Image (cartoon, rainbow, N blue to C red):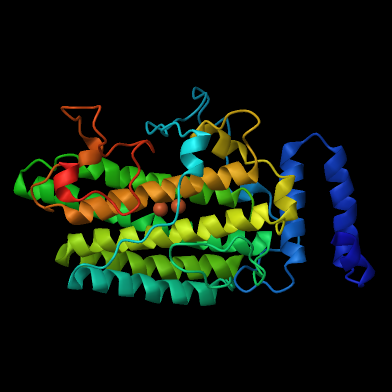
Length: 355
Ligand SMILES: [Fe+2]
Ligand SMILES: [Fe+2]
């Protein structure tokens, strides 16, 4: 593909060719990421949303490093939230699911998600053949998505997806303080969800550095979405959890389509790109299972978990019910909600099954 573009007279690609050969010779993995990600951006001739410069910025610009002189006694800073171990089989079993609308509140939630999806498709230049909600075509002949376009979409999606859990968790925390009442385990799960979404974002930022236009759009989207979700959660937390459940259904569809594109050979640059180190550490990715495809399998499994958690929370009494995902069950041999993928339910657990 590169040689075709060079012969077509695109001068910028000449320097990329040199970069590429340098990168292939080099054992430095940072160089490899940067070079391949840059090729992905260049091959995408129409960038709708990102104004990333010709050469992707060094990741130290995206992740400023604290100089050793500022914290001379610190060896490493770690998180308390360790990710569940997902097996390959469990992740392969994750599939698209849709919970049927059952009430007016569900209808409002689904309508809001469909509207946002339309706006985001427009903004990120997303073009993909329309498949049914429950099935993705085996081949995707009409797909115009390149590696760079997928990354732009993932980054925008994840920057928004990290909002609801933090807002819901924060509001329930405040309510617990105000009403001097226990919360019964919802807060931790919600905030951990937003942490998990932020890890998705940080991972994709290792592969693509957004330009000033995209950063401005993310800023605007966060301002609108954060305030909108905050007010909505005060009015109807049940509708908000349903909204997130439907949003996560869309996220699973998006990542399933990207995986299908990889399988169909439409994203060749990702075939020789390993998952960034931040992802390897966070998901505990086993050796020989650290490809871009493996990475997307982990991210999709997380989205399926958020889908299950939020649809389930949307089925519960918002004021009094405990969070089943943070609960110990009397009979652990019976299928029940958990943090792992063992008994994953695409459409969530009904209240009488979950409690
Ligand atoms: Fe995510
Ligand atoms: Fe998610």
